[in-house]
Length: 178
Image (cartoon, rainbow, N blue to C red):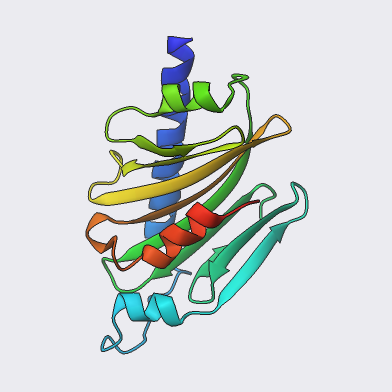
């Protein structure tokens, strides 16, 4: 079981690293050209909410109209907002099978390591937060549901020093129900 836990954590780390590097190298993702007299928080709070629906897994994800969306793959949706060269915010939804057969409590006890901590745990979901070891100075908040043998996850990734500015995204993830 311990080897499996490390394997899952390593796989998740690789997935997150690939997600971040693909966004970093993506030329199709544009930087917001809104005059910088508009603060990041004001820009986020003034954006209109939209929804994406994954028809294969019947999952709905709220996001903001300032995001660039990549929703080409069933069970995965990525949204990115680049406020400037250094401030990138990502919202990622993914569905993956529960190959370990863990319940919520087992998942939390196996995944809450290092700087990661569980904010809330119920019979159907958990909310985890922490700083990303793979991407320095970035934090995340994720909400993960166990539905019909699949983990359905929505996470927001943001610069650690911008937590107050991305409060709206954090609330979107905390309130999300697939």
